[in-house]
Amino acid sequence: MTGTAKTHSTQPATAGRDAEDVRSDLHVLFEPRETGGIAIEVESRVAPYYGAAIQTQASQVLKELGVSNARVHIRDQGALPFAIAARLEAAVRRAGLGEGKRALPEQVVQPLASAKDRVRRSRLYLPGSEPKFFINAGLHGPDAVILDLEDSVHAAEKDTARILVRNALRGVSFGAAERMVRINQLPMGLVDLDEVIPEGPDLVLIPKVERAEQLVEADGRIHEISTRCRLDRPVWLMPILESALGIENAFSIVSASERIAALTIGLEDYTADLGVVKTTQGDESWYARLRLVNAARAADVQAIDSVYGDVDDLDGLRRWGERSRALGFQGMGCIHPRQIPVIHEAFAPSPAEIQKALRIVAAFEDAQRRGLGVVSLGSKMIDAPVVHRALKLVGQAKAMGLLPPEKG
View (cartoon, rainbow, N blue to C red):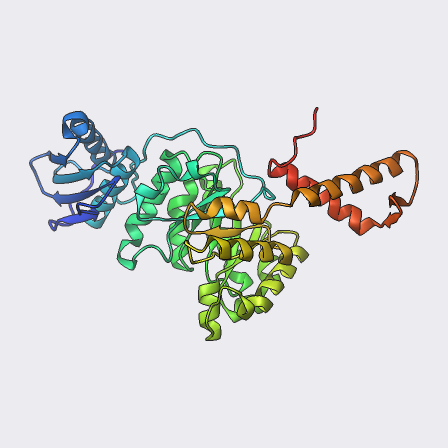
């Protein structure tokens, strides 16, 4: 959008980060003025190569935001266009200008819409205020990335982070990873939805859910935005239960919306609510995790476990993941790329499990062809629940790429 806006403030506004160790980001100082047009100064180690491009983009962003008179100083630390546009827009908004306008980066090719029951073994958390983590996140091979607007973002940077995340959804390729956003606790999270939903995230995580009404409110807001923006792809929901009350209300929460694809737990907040220490064995959260799995299964959605906080303890992570899968979870969160392959291994059926399941499925199909009501495998009779479990495991193995797809 373009247009002209009155200057509401003569006070400077800033956005972004300014330090020697900053990477893939920039700092913007924006000074609105009554006259004099636009003056842009760019500091950058790569100014001989990209200084003119940054100047051109900054001029275009200011035009789209309706700014016609301002001084702008940019200190660039290797930022890509999506981050440049986000930091400039944030500074303009902080100065009281650009109301109702957005400066969107060029859109990358969006991935196919995410299926409700897709594989979600791993979801990699990325701080929503740190563009350096976005750029190569998809190369690590997570099933999903989470652009986080909640705990990893300082309270004073919530406004800038939601613009940065919005632009990342539009201007960054995350490869095959499902694109998730963790919004803030409602009602602040509704403002996050207003910003990010028009760019079509695949799934939204809603933190600290304790009542079904919170899901109804979020669902309604997403429906309203999707209708207005004519979005043609689904936006799924994943409530995060982080308190004793949330766990007790698990089934009513997970049943509150057709958008809910999965249910998960936040163990740091949950154990704090109980007043107990979070351990690597997880005995203190056993009841909560079992109740969550049961509620998710009853509602026919996925149960997803919490993160394992010690990024150096890969053996402990593997044990946690294996126990988690045994409880009925289908995946978990991660906070470092090195955790991804360990999690994928922990949540994958073993070769022995796959071969046994294939034999059961083959015996079932043979019995069906022969018109037999009883399925046998060697000297053992196989009843319907065993067949159902085997069929499900084979389907999971195919979805994880552990078995070749069926030939058409």
